[in-house]
Length: 456
Image (cartoon, rainbow, N blue to C red; front, side, top):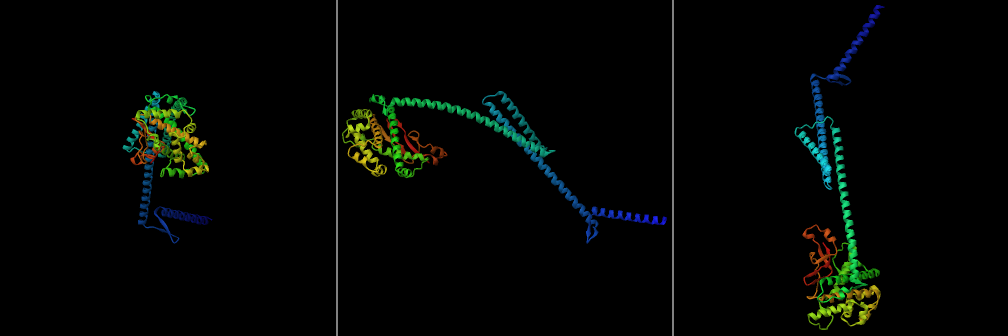
């Protein structure tokens, strides 16, 4: 029995030693570099073991260097984020300082000034840290995140201050606009009162009825010129309306009147038609009676009185009554000649389907249609302006500017301000005259601007 037990115990001890030996072998392979070979463990040589240890140490060193670079980069990014946050805070404090100055707020100025000084100190401290290379951060990610939050808050504060400033400016502009509107309304009311005084039922007031050569001034001419321009525009509007009813191509018509002209707006085509009517109606304005009368005229002083008397006589009556009363007068001849020249037979046929009005005018009669009455009213105004011009000494002269001329505020009034907005200020882009809409006048040393349409 004892021998059996001893034999079993010996067998167990032998197995235990084998297990410990096998465990050591596995441990050595793991530490010193044991590789299997054809299913059988192969123990590397001493040189191989040393080489593996060097390689492992090199890998560990590389990993440590990369970690150090990442930590340094994160710390630098956190530092830059803090710097930008501080600069944004300085901007916000400075914006607050500016806002507190207008309207003047002493408490706000002091608070903003202290904030600016504080933020500048923070920037100075960051500068010293950078120079001393003390930019290490224990938790750079958290620092960067907090700095970005601070920067966004500062930017938001800056925008809020800018918004308040813009709101205050808007309120100021609105108050100025309200004030200007009130002034405009007052000016319009005054103008309406003046118009009622100067023009009663389409006729000029007694201001021009009682004028004499000694009291005649350029202001009288300017007042009547405005009435004349208004009358011309009324006729042009009626003419365009008739063209549209007859299905005319207004763009082609305007281009034929002013070739090459480029209109800033579609509604500006009317200026081309106004230019055409003015050219025809004012052609010969500088000659007494438009050179249509063969009667000899008296000397200067008597001639001035003659034209002033003509002005007073025709001004106080309706043009149609005057045409019927004096069918062979200089005004009647002027009215007939200008209508036949301004309204081409083909145009009249296209607009009205016949030449009835033209035939009546040729025969010395005057049709009482809306179209001709409007034309006759315009012709009357132009003729009266002509009479008034020759009542001055020296006589009034008419002028217009050539196409392509540079704009001059002394001699011209622009009908297209868009040309100035499109100019960049260089000589090449200066506005140029496309055509003259209404002519200008000279009365002695007084210059009345002509109205021009500009292009670039």
